[in-house]
Structure formats: C-alpha cells, structure tokens
Amino acid sequence: MLLRGLVPLLLSLASLTSSAPLTCEQLTRPADQLDPGRFQGTWALVAGSMSYRPYLEKFSKGKGASVHFPSNQSETNISYSRGFLIDDKCHYSSSIMTLNGSSFTLDGIPASNSSGLFVQTSCPDCLIMSFTVESGNRTHFYLFSRRRELEQNEIQEFKEQVQCLQMPPPAMMDPTKELCPWPEEKLKNED
Image (tube, rainbow, N blue to C red):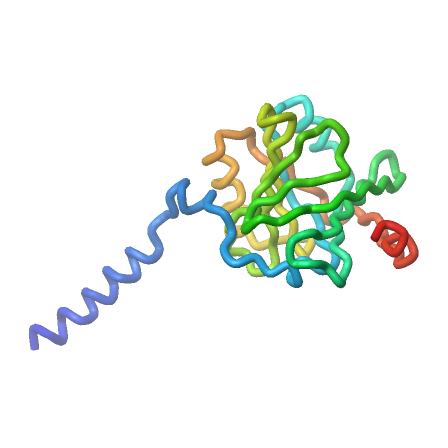
C-alpha cells in the first residue's frame, strides 16, 4: 500500500526535475553532432542580437534576410550565401565556411576576422549561429529557421540564450516581409 502511494509521488518529482530551467551553460553550449547535409537549402533569419548596439539598431530596421547552403557540400568546407533586403533591393554575399566540430571560420568576408559557433537549440528546424568578429571585439548571435514564425517557447529559449551572453535583447524579423529569392543561376555562379 505504501509503495502504491510512493510511485506517483516519485513520478511527479521526476517530472518537476526534468522541467527545471536550463542553466546558461546548458543554453549556450555548442551544438552536438553537426551534419553538414542538414544545412542544405534556405534558412530564414528569425531574430538576432549584436553586442555593438549601433549595429543592432540598424539590424532591427531590416526587412528580412536568409542564408542558403547549396547541395553537394564537403564535410568541412561549405559554401554559405546570405541575402538581405535593404531599401527594397536584394543584396547577396557569399563565403566559404570551414567547419571544425561545431565551430567554424569564414573566408570571403574582408577584414572581419570572423569565426563562429553553432549553438545548441531545442527547436527542431532551427540553426543558431554565434559570430565573433573583429578579432573578438564584437559578437553577433542569430536564430535561423526553415519556418518564418516560431513557437513562443522557441523564441523564449533564444531570448534566454541572448541574456546568458549578456547581449541586448534580440531584434525580431517581420515574418510577413518577403525574403530575397535564391535563383538557381545565381547559386551556380557562387559555387
């Protein structure tokens, strides 16, 4: 009889333990087991924060952005293209991302000395990329997804990650704004 009463109590305590808030160490840990094949395709920028507030203010006025990873990538060197909608005109740039576990360096971004890290997220179709630029003087932290709008708990997790990094609250992109198209002929020229 005592055992019957103890089992539900233990189960309820176990569920409380599993729903405990994550620590900053857990929220900002590097992503596990990156599969470069998973990157393939287009990812919409959902939100971002920057340690340098003037850039964050400019970023928050953006209309939309996305990144594209073409197919046929190697395991360590990945083509990485960005599309930004600025003043109703699409601007594109690309570089080569060299992976080393969950960290990476970027070639093709002049004078930025850019390196980065993929950060763990519970969102199943999201990428979180943390960039350290200008030899560590600035940090950019971006949330990308296959979806334009995320669930509230996914956004909240990202906000907590930004807070753990002691960065300003993130700017959210407007999911109703169109993203720059990724025409196949443009992508072929960038590879």
